[in-house]
Image 1 (cartoon, rainbow, N blue to C red):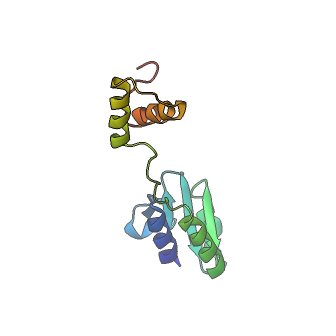
Image 2 (cartoon, one colour; image 1 turned 90 degrees about the horizontal axis):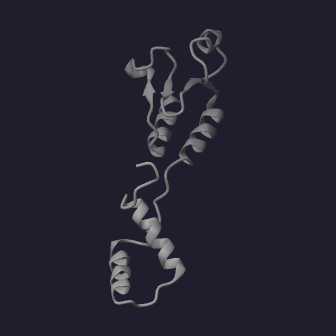
Image 3 (cartoon, rainbow, N blue to C red; image 1 turned 45 degrees about the vertical axis):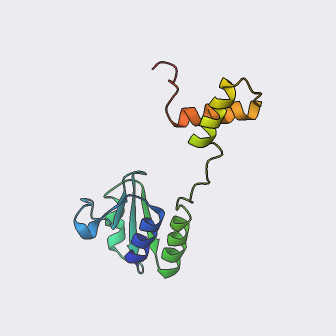
Length: 129
């Protein structure tokens, strides 16, 4: 069951450490440093779980096959979708600059796209920089 969670975390591109690697001193199955959350996977009820819950704050306990599969599905849904092609790219930027130089008309939407693109390329300084 732990392998299902590991595969889902990998598919979602989430950073994690495992107790299997000895990388979780609290001896819980997984640690997600980005979220500060631990995950403990159990096949069924265990008297050890009470002790394990006291080892760290923010522990998600998954008990049983169905809960593991549901949680793994939810994690997979966190996968980063392929980003859409940007509405504005270097080619459109160069065309826009050429039109400005030739004093050709431009639209407000083009200005907004140009501004957003320049921010994304870190061409514009933010206030206080």
